[in-house]
Length: 178
Image (cartoon, rainbow, N blue to C red; front, side):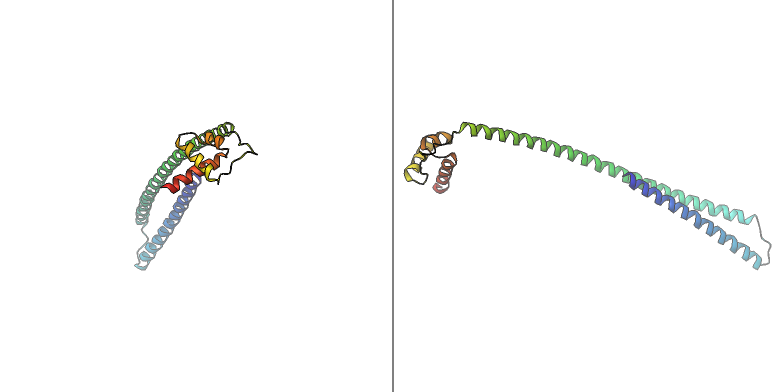
């Protein structure tokens, strides 16, 4: 934002220098015309007339320069206020996102902790004595134990199945019984 203000001030300065040069050019041309018209009429140059014209020209130039400068300053102030408002909004959004990120990280940590607890609590099924999950009697046993309200871990232990297999059988029964 500081670089924008510097650029705008540099442009304003350049415009003011250009206006001064144009004023000098206009005054020089006005003086030349006044002298040439007086000489063409055969009148001697009137030195009192020239300073009045010069004074009026300078006053008009200063008045216009002041109006332009005030308008430019007002415009700069408006842009500064808009920029500050946008920065405040961005700061608020950044704080909101950081808060959301903190809550998300906490939720992930809690989920990982719960997963670790469940992993410790669920013993692996006996490797050599594992039941066939596709067998109708195994499926019937799982569904009967689920209807009694046993947890998935307890059903897995009693039916000698993996926890995922028990969940799959229960979910398939729910999906196909509807």
